[in-house]
Each structure stands twice: as structure tokens, then as C-alpha cells.
Image 1: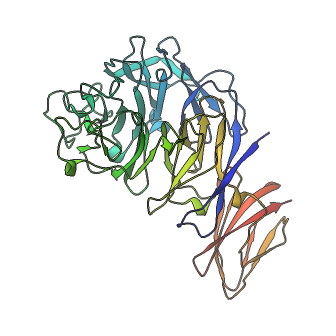
Image 2: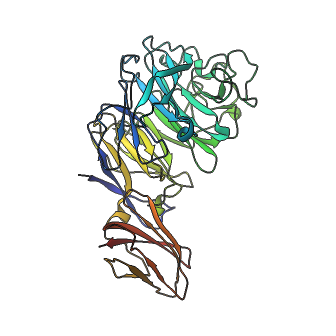
Image 3: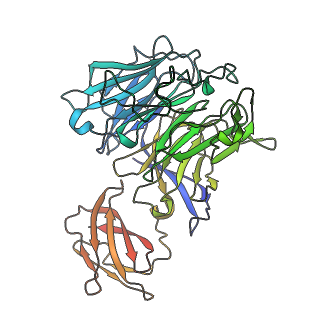
Length: 457
């Protein structure tokens, strides 16, 4: 049974009405989840820190056999090592290729390529090919998030090596891959090639570097507008989220010279005007009160079920169990705490809906706007009838506003019906839908979108 957890209202200047973020439990009993990956279908792949990848199905069931078990290859010495990343090739449906990132038995970063077996629910464990290995001097700040970005290149986040205060300035050293985001071409070369427009091509040891100046970039993502959002875990005071045009390489994000916007250790550092500053920062304490300790990067919401969330960047803090939202004006609002979870990762399904996982709770949740999930669809100018329906549904105009189009989604966010509405025929049919509850969105002639619960019998 799916469960809903509700947090307090989040009020944003970009949202006309207050909204309440809620979590709908869709899976449980995972062990230290660190990544939620999607292969372009309805399954979610849940990456577990100690080396298993398990498949969560749309009905909430979990396959008994893991998709992949690399627990014998993974070093797990402390809270930040283990299996931390997974990403599917953009052409996975044709080539079956995916990549994982983990700390190996020597404690070093390993980026490994695999292919799926003839069984789509099981990887071919014999297909492993290590494409990149990076020496890690410590058991923390390993990062390992991977995403495919513009140009089809693979981007990889690597932490600074873990020593307190980065005393050797790994993150600023362009001869090292530590404290960087890398960009490589995995479709050419053996095992990869360097894109010709990488910013430091020809610099010793630095050909792979795309961006630098990170402490522990724990999850990054690209949005549909071509921006990269990077969450970088702070030293002892400040957490930060960075946003930049993903087309611009060679940016310096500041660590160890700066923590957030504050000077940290500027010895030998570039001028301040050469730093790319974070768009969001928050402190570990507000006065004497603890607030948070470690940022977990998320996604810009680009799904269809919750229009009020459109364009918002959602992230979390591992320690305070809260979800933050960043609006178009870069203003941040926070939910109340979802205690006991210790959020370590977000995910996105094939419909663009967002999920979050608790490293401690072992639970996976769908993120919902509970304003749209309750019966309080206030403010709609349209009457929808009959409801429940079994065939033709009529939308009656109101307050001089005409319905222009409708979309119908199931409760997982899958688009089922999309129709234009004419002035002469304000109807559509649901005769092909199974009995159940759906979300109906009606776009009016005033360009506003109105939500309705639609029951089909």
C-alpha cells in the first residue's frame, strides 16, 4: 500500500497559491540507497551503497534477483564509500550499455561500463569494463555522480580526496582529477576519448576536466534549458548549490579558496572575479540553532502532473530531512522535516516525475504537490460532468473563460489523453480508460491550467 507523508506549506513568490509538498511511499526495505536511475521505461533502478542494484516496478514490487551485484568489488569503509552512481546510455534501448561508479577494494574511484543480458531485468556481470580509475587518498568525498549531458558526453563528479580543508588544494590543481567534474566521450576511443572542446585539452593530467573547484559535488543534473545544477557539500559552515550554462566549460567554482561566498583559504588562488559563485547557500546553523549539514542535489521539476512545481529546482539536506525548492528568482523555501530518512538521492522517471530516497530509512518516495492530490481543487472556473464518467465527459465554460485543451494522466504521471477543445464541442471521451482515479488538467483561454480529479467507472 502506498503511503503519503505530508510536510508544511511551502510559499513561493513564483506560485500563486501556497502548496504542500508530500511524499508518497512507492518502495521500501532498500539498504542505503544512493541513486535512483531510469532506463527510459517504467522501472526505477535503486542503487544500494554496499553494491546491489535492484529494480522497483511501477506496482511497488521489487524483483527478487538484483539487476547487478558488485558487492564483492566495492570498498565500503565508512559512510561515503561504496556504490554511488549509475547512469544509462542515451541509446540504452538499442545498445544496452550503462555505467556505474563505486570505490573499489583499494578505495579508488572506478567508473565501469556494463551491458544488459538477454534478460532485461538482469545485467551481464561478465561485461564489466573499467573505463576510468582515479586514486582517492581518503575514504570520504568520493562523489561519483554521473550524467549524460549536451553532445552525448558523459559527465562525472569527483570529490577532492577528503582531507580536512583540502590542504593540498586538490580542487584547484588542474593536474589532478580530484575536486572536478569531468567530461568524456564514451562512444569513441578506447576506453574513451576527450572531446576536442574540453577546456583544458593539452594540460598535463587535465584533459578530462570540464569544471573545477569542488569539495564533494554530491549529485548534479542538467535541465531542459541547458543548465547544469551542482550541489557541493560544504566544509563546516556553508552548503551550496551552483547553476551554470552547461555549454560553458572551464569554470572555477571556488573550493578551497571559498566556502560558499565566504573566503576560506585564498592562498595562491585566482582573483575573486574569476570564480563562479553559487546561486544558493545556507548555513549549518541559524544563530545557535542547527539547520543542516550536507546538501543533496536534485532536479528541476519538468514533469506534467504538478504545474505549480514547473521549473522549480528541488534539493534536500541529508541531516535536516527537509526538501528545498528554488524558484526562478533563485529564492529558496523549505518543507518541514520528513524525519528519519537522511535523503541521499533524487531520481526521475520516464514521465519526468521526481522521486527521493532515504539512505537511513531505505524508503523511496514519489514527490507530489499535495494541493493537486487532494479534493481541494479550488479556483477552477470549469464544471466537469459526469464525474464519475464512463464515456463522454463535458467541460462547461465559466466566468467568460473557455476550455482550450485537456490532458489526462494516471496517478503515476503517465500521459494518457491529450485533446484540443473547440467552442462547439466541449467534450472528450474516456471510454478507453480502465476504472480508476485520474488527474484531469484543463487549459483555459486565459492560459491558466486547472486541475480536477476525474473518476472513471
